[in-house]
Image 1 (cartoon, rainbow, N blue to C red):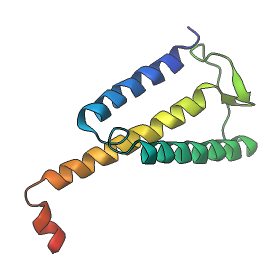
Image 2 (cartoon, rainbow, N blue to C red; image 1 turned 120 degrees about the vertical axis):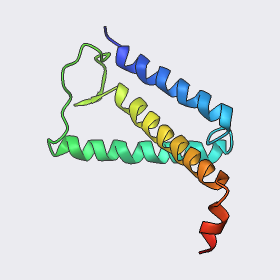
Image 3 (cartoon, rainbow, N blue to C red; image 1 turned 90 degrees about the horizontal axis):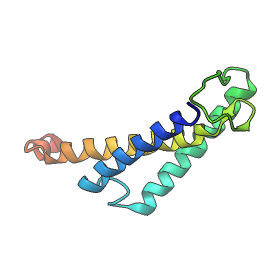
Length: 113
């Protein structure tokens, strides 16, 4: 079913955004910084992909789940969406981990030693 991979990425991103909204971890706490971090991370990984494609390391496999639209040879349309999702997920996970770390009662004592 063409497009299913992109739909899965978007549904997953919506789930992460719901957690972010509920706990105000990234985009709801600092939208500008979140957009910048996700944008820079996505751009970095797209350059990484381009280098890998040029070196012949990364190739696009044939999958019926892809839309079939390529932005460049071996770079499907879904790739930037996946990379943005990956960056956003990492940022939300990091923010959540830092929130949990700060909430621990003995965190202040550990920080001083």
